[in-house]
Image (cartoon, rainbow, N blue to C red; front, side):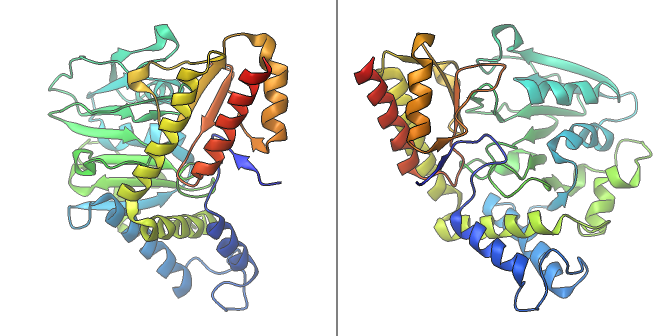
Amino acid sequence: MKKHNYSAGPCILPQEVFEKSAQAVLDFNGMGLSLLEISHRSDEFVTVIEEARALVLELLGLQGKGYQALFLHGGASLEFLMVPYNLMKVNGKAGYLDTGTWASGAIKEAKHFGETIVLASSKEDNYNYIPKNYEIPSNLDYFHCTSNNTIFGTQMKSFPEVNTVMVCDMSSDIFSRTLDFSKFDLIYAGAQKNMGPAGSTLVVVKEEILGKTGRNIPSMLDYQLHIAKESMYNTPPVFPIYASLLTLQWLKNLGGIPAIEKINNAKAELLYNEIDRNPLFKGTAKTEDRSNMNVTFVLNDENHTAIFDQLWNEAGISGLKGHRSVGGYRASMYNALPLESVQVLVDVMKDLENKA
């Protein structure tokens, strides 16, 4: 039976990426060696990481605009630490928008480095909306936001105008929609949502914002050093970077971000329309802030839980359970999830309505 993978991450990737990655594990580029055993300094892998870094900037429309793309370690959680280390001046100040668990984690780390202001928060309503109409002081070293909140199913539909450095954690919606990415001075994202397997982190940074903090930064946490070493200061995660390259190539061949955005909009419209139509379900996020990547919803009557769980399991759906912070269900619809999988879920929801 075909599986329909709604896992929040690590998550679904394109089938061709699995197939090409599997072949590379057995024999990479006809070398007679596995991708897992070649030197990261070999010409073959240097070509991989250089193409991946260039393709990131191409897809984001940032080529020739002073940005560098890096593939680093530690997940987005390490970036919570690296961002203030590299951007907050000694005795400086940063402003954060608190929209969920990961934004809260970033705030916690920034407080180790200096004054960290929470400009607005939706915590009191269990993060079911994106705060709006907040003021951003002009004396900040940087402003930090999280574009999509995986756990709570909210997404920033617009971004504020700032007079400082703009930093965004795009872990769960990078490459999913068209934006003016040049508005952001630093973007970071764990690979394991829209880009590849867990184990690598993408950082896209405008080089001119670095080196201004007055801090002595440890080597492994210094963006400037990673740029100078072309993302190879130490042994990079070879397999996740190669799989990320394959995913980026798949996206480019599809037509890039504008093409996948149309597909993602169709998937979100299909599922949200059913949630709003079907009297057995309700969404948990405010309508205007609903995420196209992570759809969170609950049953109006929990007595239907057992039969609904049985139906979606029998339909080959996987990974639909909601995070414990919200409960209910979470349909993560990253780039590689096909529209047909969303239709299967919608059909199951209609089937439950008929049986209830």
